[in-house]
Image 1 (cartoon, helix red, strand yellow):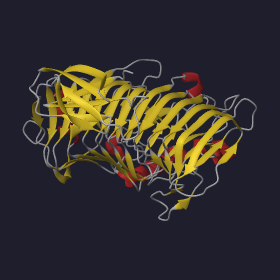
Image 2 (image 1 turned 180 degrees about the horizontal axis):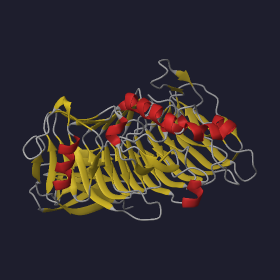
Image 3 (image 1 turned 90 degrees about the vertical axis):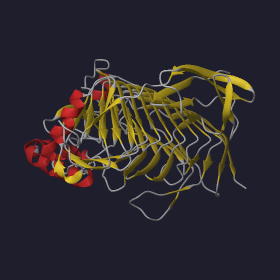
Image 4 (image 1 turned 60 degrees about the vertical axis):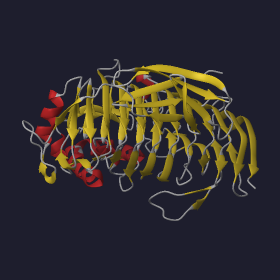
Length: 494
C-alpha cells in the first residue's frame, strides 16, 4: 500500500514525513533513500536530510519491509539573504528593556521573497508584529522575541475568533493573515524557524487584558444577568479578547520549526480558516497560563504537527471548529489533522473540542507519548454544540486514557437544536496507564482508561468505537454510557 510523502526544504536541509501506513507493525523500521542511495533506517515517520546542494533536485523514497511505499521529488532551498534587525536602518536592541516594535515591524515590512528577518542572540522586547506572504523569520540560538505585558502594545485590535466567538481581539505577538470566515487564504508561504524562543507576555499580560476588558464590558456583562453564570468564571467573557502567541488567520503553506514557543496570553499557536500549516520540532511551554493551549487548528484543513514537546497548563493540542450557534452557521469543518511523535511533560493532552460546532473529521494520531497528561486523548463538547466529531484514530501511543464526554464549561450562547454526533473512533495498539497528571495538580490521579459517555438523546450516543490490541497497566473499570456498537480488545499488560 502506498502512503503520501511530504517534504519541506529549508536552507540545505530537507524534512521528510509520511502518514503511518495501515500495514505498519509496532516499531516498524523505514528505510529512506535519496536519489536511489540508502541513507539509513528510522522507526519514526519523519526524518531530516542535511548538507544538500542549493536548488538541486532530489528524489526521496520511503520503504517498509523492502517495499517502496512512497516517494517525493523536491528541490533544496536557496539560502535567503539576512535582514539583521540589529543593523541599520533597523537598529533593534536585544537588551530585554528597549521596546523594538517599530524597528522589528520595519524589518518585517521590508522582507522580500528571497530574504529573512534575522534575530541574533539577545532578548528583543516587542508588542504585536505583522508578518506577510512570502517571507521568513529566523531566530538564532539564544535569540528571544519577547512580548510585553502591556495590552496597549497589542493595539489596534484585529478580527479573530477565541473559544468559538468571532470578535475584536488584541493582536497576538505574531500575526499572519486577516480573518474572513467566508474566504480563502490571504497570507501564504511563510517560514518561522531557528533555534531561538518566541515568548509572549504570559499570564501577566492575560490578567492585564482581562482587567482592561472588564471595565470596557461592564455594562454588557451586567446586561446578561444570570446568563453570565453559564460561563466558566468571571474571566471568561473579558478573557476572549486576549491575543495568542502566533495567530494564523486565512493562511496557507506556513511552517513553524525548531523553536521554543511559550507563554502566549492564551493559546500558543492558533490557525483559523487556514490550510497546510506544518509545525515540527518545537517545544511548547505555558504551564502557568490560563487557557494555555499549545497548538490549536480551528476550522482548518491539512494541518500537521510532529516531533513536539509539550509543557502546557491546558490542552497540548485542541482541535476546534467554532461554537454554537456561530460555528454551526459558518460551518467550516476541521479536516485532515495529523499529530505524531509528540510527548507531554504537563498538560491535558490531545483534545477535540470543546468548540466543535462546525464539525471535525479525519484526525490521525500516532507514535505519541502523552502519559504525563491528564486526559491523553479527549473528545469533548457540550450538549448545545451540534456539529460532529468523526473518524479519529489513535495508534501506537501511550495515554492515560481515551475519553469522549460532555463537559459543563464554556456553555454560554444559544444552543443547537440537536446534540453533537460523536462517531467513528479507533484505538489500536494503545497502552493505557490509567493514571494522569497536569501542571495544576502535582499528584497523579487514578483514572478509568476508557470513558465513552454519549448524550441521553436517541441517535446521539457515542457510536462505532473500536479498541484493538490495547493494553492497560492496572485493573481498572471501563465506563460506557449512552453508547452503541463498541468493541473492546483491552488486556492487562504483563
